[in-house]
Amino acid sequence: MDGKESDLIQYHLKNNPSLSMQSICDSVIGLIFATLFNTQISVALAMYFLGQCPKALQQLREEFQQKMNDTGTTGKLTWDDYKNMEFCESVINETLRFGNIVPGLWRKTLSDIDFKGYTIPQGTTVMPNIAAMHLDPSAFENPNIFDPWRWLVMKKSNNWMPFGGGVRQCNGSEIARMEIAVFLRHLILNYNWELDEPDHPIAFPLITFPKDLPIRIHPLVEKTA
Image (cartoon, rainbow, N blue to C red):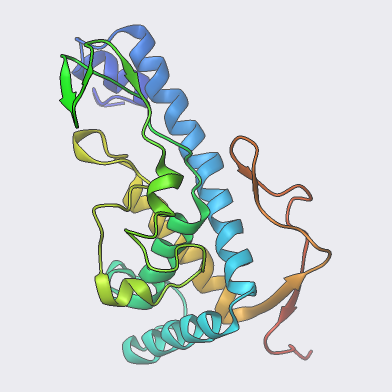
């Protein structure tokens, strides 16, 4: 292996000697949870929200098609393409805001903290409620409506924290967003879909679909032999 670490555990053991084995295990489990669960439920939520918002679906399809026409590509999505798809980014931002995949963040105070007249003692576990922040009408106008166009105006918000924030922000946030973009591009340029039977997302305690979101998919253009 040319002296290189072959996996995340080896990397932590070699480069982070201050981490306890418990911390290393938490990091590995968190990575598995984030990549396997969070990304797939994000994709399902995007399909669910877009299926209920034909205007957003059509605008996203037009952006994908326009990008292909501009670059002359018919297959792979380049990094530059991904970074310059403004409405796709807006759809992903709104899906993560409205979907609230992560219910909260777990943190521990390293010292006593004074906050709005209250003292939070050192060692206290603190859990900010992300959904309360994302659905706060003082932070987002009409927060209970799926509105990706809001991100074309405000671009970013300090109240948007699906990946956490600060030095502990999820370091896989960009690849997760890119995975969603790649999936949506392939799906939307080639297919339409609708629910095969009624279903809706619920938080119990994490976001899930009671019926696993059964859908019926139709090719945009029927292929002939």
